[in-house]
Image (cartoon, rainbow, N blue to C red; front, side):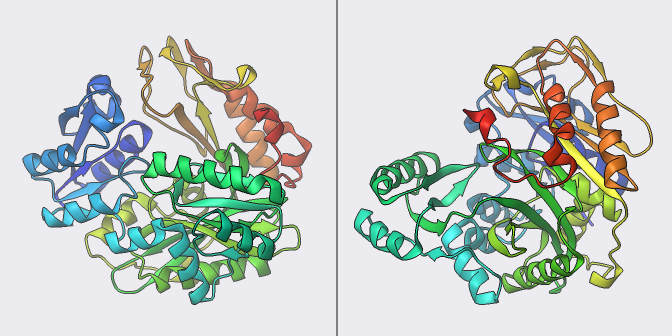
Length: 445
């Protein structure tokens, strides 16, 4: 087992990893930007190193600075959290070259799954259902030819995409050329790679993701699903597990497909397979996330399995001590992302000092956060203040518990989206679990 781990991240995920390490008896090293000198993770870790300026590119995305801090602190491993460098194959490779363990899958797996076109072809070969579409398209004329075969509406998607960038919806042939040029330009600017492919646009659909864990001995298990369909602009707001609309038969098939997918790429660590689930009960591979997800706590709540600790154990070469048949699901969990933004003013970001903070309590109520009273939220990073998670015996009870927790949550000094989350939880579509990825589309207009 490792004796010292560097956390190459900030915010609530850095705190989450530090807590797991402390419980495992592992020393921690934090890295921070100039804007995060007073951040909680900087003070909770055993050691802290400033790695650059306030902008992400000057600090948390600065690979050489992170590696230098790891070498200087004699950390044996780096935990990348999510976002930033967590799915950067070059960084994972750089860790290996410096004899530092990257807590995640091998860089070759990150490369293969980060290439959305290659991932699609890999899953298809492994027998995992994929969305009808085509491989990479070479220019507008090629795109037009493939579009005629696929049919409209369709999506143009960046090979190296993420966070909803490099994606364009095309409803009819006349929109194709403009959408193609926009998608490739955005992808080139965001990822340095303008390559795109196309898929049939499926709607209405649910966004269902399956959590997997793998070790270095070829063992892969699936820890069930999360319904992540409550989204705006491809950004998740609420996640829950299990997905109420999924039948036991479909769940079994999705678990089998997920294990098959993990084994097909020799997956090690925690990862997620994301699927689109249509109204006829069919599911299709969308993409693989080769990292820990923001919403991992809901899976931890229903399975009792600590995903962060197992990330660390498998990276250290330990074998999973349970098999698929050992995994049991208990109750229902819901997570609400609490963001510093104003949903009633076009989701305008909100910053400033938190003048008062009260965190909800009670059995099976969890608030993962890195903020504290009098903390000033910097304007340089993601707007998420924290994640409110609840667990109960039934979905109805979990919804009521989440509503109570949201009402108890007090964050004064910044505008946040807890009142909007309450509205979503009370909506008929959410209560009866018929909500889809399109349900919140009207709030974006």
